[in-house]
Image (cartoon, rainbow, N blue to C red; front, side, top):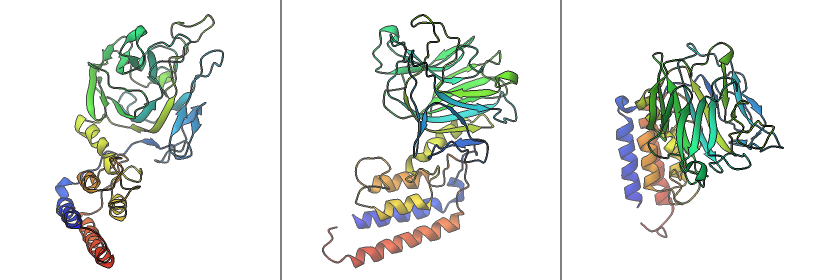
Length: 336
């Protein structure tokens, strides 16, 4: 086992010594990690929470049906986009259930509101079973003058999903689920542009003018409880390849947004055991986890630059030698 581990570390060394293989994702304009606060890791203003609770590593949104009248969510005013019609929005989110909190449990849940709660337009998930559905899975869709929906359901209850939404200067819109293209269309009328009095981004919070599907006296909130791991806003429309690169957080053992030497150390220090370094959450830190770090090393969801190849090579060489020393120091009681 150790020989295989040592060989794999040497493969990492060879792999990472090639500068052409090191890539960094574009840096976000805003980055909210919800590590106990609402701070922007890129130095901007805090995002506004209208209800909800910030935990140690997530933002908990928990809307309530009337008479609770609790339409929680996040608001970012004047996001500072160079062109308010060009952006990418990235989030990792999990929903407790896929139907909203209306008394008769409607199939829609709003993800992003573009018009400051003045219109029903926006990104939604919709129960694949429609009104008769039971919340087993949901489509991702955009509803407005334009309409687009995924060919098959992409969202499951109580399961994390990585979503990215982009719009370029020509109005080309795309949405991605777990790194893969999910839907696309052309926004010919600017519905998805943040401009003038609509220069406000609202997340996981419904508008105030949706048709009243519930009891008299609305509003009826197309929202549902869940957790948001992080939210990032980019000043560019990411390409499909760049979006796929954002999925490289698989080897990010310390959840700091990049895969670096700290993550490699986590795998080395816990190899053969459990805990930090178990990138695929299969209950053991092993060669699969080492390969995850190797394959994604230098990638950064937060746009941080990868270390110089020479630095990586020296550091990993040291890790290999430390592994040899630790192995020899454990005596003959260790099995191969």
